[in-house]
Image (cartoon, rainbow, N blue to C red; front, top):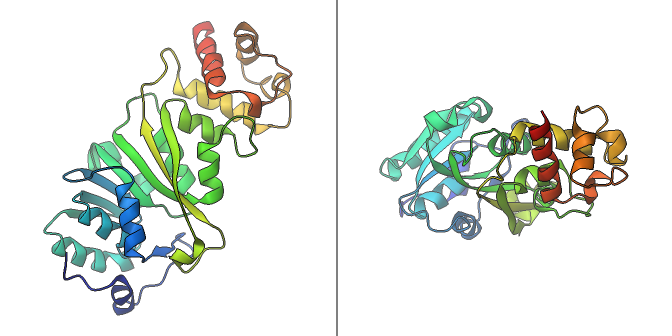
Length: 274
């Protein structure tokens, strides 16, 4: 690992450039990348799943931290430099060529931390998938993910704030989410138009008696018309208004005023009444 050429040299030698169509923005600052790799804590001997490694900037940092990395990359231009990195790592990097949205992660990867500078065009979709499903605890141990700052703020938002919405509830009802660091646009090549941030999420015990499917339907209805009172936004969802009354929540309130615990209480009551 010590004899690796600088990332800029690797990018130049292979004629790489960030693809807008793939949502790519390359990070080259090794000190910054090492800071990101330290966010989950010690990775010595741990397995890490990385989505969209590109030329391998964060991959290098994860390997330097002692991790064994499984990376999925759909950009065939990046496969050769990643293969070179795999050789330099002594076999601690395995690359899957393909679309991250189509990878059967529990079987292809197994228990792992996830760390990624996510492609902007699929980041939210991947996060929602990782946070969803009835099986809990999940196959992943933690998530350390780069998003546009606006998306990161929506993940960690508190009730009553403009950023609070469905994504915050899904991220916080059975996980702990925090904003680990902000990253200036100038750190990327090419620089995106907006600031970015790293979010760290760790699973915690799920509340008993709550279906993820029910909670997802509840939040989709409540925040789908967030400016309306709950009596209007939840009207099309069977059992929601009755559950709201049963747990003592005023239907004249709006979705952004409900805490995560209140959404969980309503979803639990909906399940009990079903």
